[in-house]
View 1 (cartoon, helix red, strand yellow):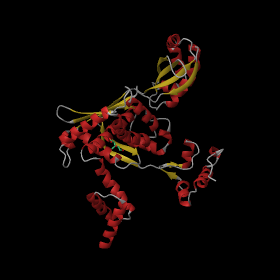
View 2: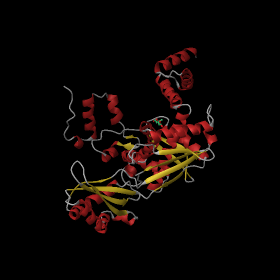
View 3: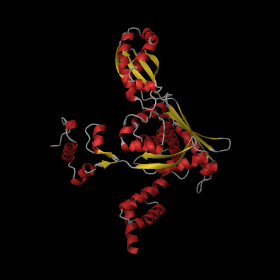
View 4: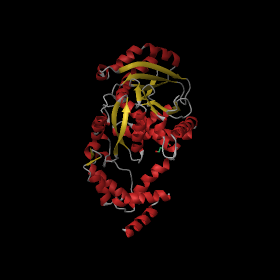
Length: 432
Ligand code: MEV
């Protein structure tokens, strides 16, 4: 009989008991259980801390934390923590940051931390009249929203405006969608906004004569954009066998494909998100919110497009810009609860959520540059091949002093496979 996943009261069990249950369900070995059970601390987080963050915790899942170097943004130097499982990303960001540094570093900016919260109103007899009434009550609604979080208001944030959209026809008939426009200061803002929406919903229902359903933040944070720009001198782009001019032109041509074709745009933007997500995760921010916002924004005019733009200036140098929603915070959520997230923010030394947003967008642009440069010149596999070959050499049992030789042989032969690595290790071992 196959084991059941129907477990009642799992959340109430002590963590060790949960782990025991999973062990039996999945037939885990002692070693596999030890991987989770013995880790008092993993990834800088104790299992007990994890148990207070989410539900049904049995252990901690670790990710490598790397540091990207060379970043200069608005004249300031940053070391950037990145949490990611994929090889080449941190190296790529660091390399691209060095190229942009040659051109004076990144310029970055951001909008005020304005988020949109939505309330859905149904069963409104006359939607346009209700819209009129709601807008007339703007002051009262905003005041009620602001009473929910006096701290944020004291810090200069709070409800800023009310917008009302009429959807004349939907699957369930006409509806009103009220937008609460809210300045969340240094928070990501979801909790603050959702609390305010809950508070104003009954008032909105009363004024409109309708019935409210959803009350939730929108992740399309298109009023909270961050942008970065960087110039790479043509000469800095030159590499073996590829003059700078060719590489610069190749990057512009690669961009043109992403601007025109959603199949390429998805991959192009994925490269950007490699950098964006890694910093978002390292700093304890909600990377799913950032992903959702990024892709919705990329499709804002009805076609899914590249988030970045690459062109050449009059001198022939390469100019890149990236502008995208960036709802990240430096207070609240995991940013202060996760010890490594706290540390990552300290390493970055950012003083505001806007500064963090600007750093993240600069990293996204750097990551995009690293990928396009490799793709436009030698192709992405060459760099990846060496890294992959290194992993295979180690897996084939090469001692540390032999790894480089095994890698060099496999790369030269263009045969990067475990069986070949094993053969080379055997050969070199016999020889020595
Ligand atoms: C791989 O993680 C990311 C790339 O595919 C991005 C791109 O193609 O631009 C290399």
